[in-house]
Length: 520
Image 1 (cartoon, rainbow, N blue to C red):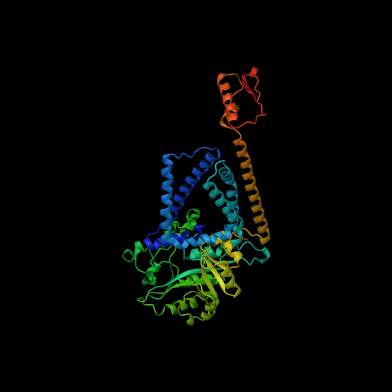
Image 2: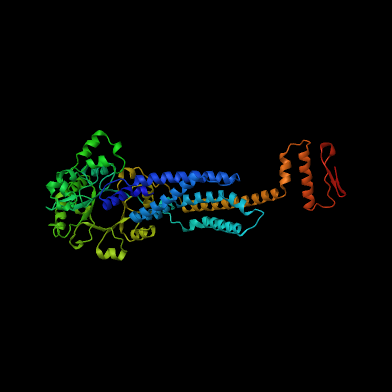
């Protein structure tokens, strides 16, 4: 599920370390190896238990399990410290996977009832057996009732499904070309994006250009052209200097989305020759395609020469591009009173009353900031909501079912292939599946417990001598006769009835027992 945010994670690491590296690969590799190893041992353990064998783990595997445990704990602590907000993806993903996780967990708990029943119905009684039975019963009951707590937007009547959310090209199509470049925006429009989103920075001479980072190191060759200024804020370069930088070669070299290998030679050549894009160029492209634009403007620092005029610099660029003002959405929360004719949005989650007081017409929210209930409240009050980043079909499907009108995506080419929510189910259909699976599971568990009880009671009627005799071939031998005598005396000690008689034929080497005694 976290794949939706891989690039944001790498960008976060870059902002902390100053070096661009794909930090998701070590996490994925270690997770895959550790999970596969532990799963393999778990399967072997289940086979051992089912065959009644003891679990004698070799010392090498003990070290391997310990290493996996320590790596997992340290990895979770590291990621939580660096990327704590990503835990929100779990809550979002449960809206999509909860019905299927419920069925999978129900099947698993039902399957292990064989082991639980075999342990609980033993002849010896202990407090641990009672505790195991209690815990198992509570877990099974909780799983049966778990769907009562689910909030799954895609469990709905298909006739209530809203129109397909429009897709905004977030920095163009950065999976197919270098972000915030002309090629990237062109690719986004080619793949059905209805709007373009860009990060705007103001140069030292008042030219708005597109740059996400505070420096030019990651997305340009500033380290080669201006090595002494590579750590300088991007806004302190003039437009002539910025325009002289290459803004596409880094994409081919670092391959941030693992897509560079799929490009043709012509596409690679065109991307490799890209320069930094100005705001005017992007807006003209949007106007030509009859599209709209969403502008995330980075306000210059106080010591910047354009600190007091950045607002007018941006408006002049919008007017120069010739795009209708109603197609441009403004995101900064400052100078809203001076903005006339532009749509106004904010990335801050506000109440409906606060939205109306500020004159905001829409919200641009991270997918983790708004629950399904809050989205419904916004939409019911005619507040348009754009959710970002939405790069995976499963998340796009959830938001579609929630009625979100638009999403901002790094992958418009991926979302274009989602003509309908991946899964959609009516409430009545899901209730039927839920109740049927619960009843079947409970019936199987009860049957397993009764069968294990019957099986154990049958085994308790045999002592070790019985079992030994059943495994011995029927032939006359001194050892067999001795064993049979032990069996008879064992039965005597267990208190055979005085009227019982055990006849063992002498011609076959058997012994006869009667009320009067034992004869050979």
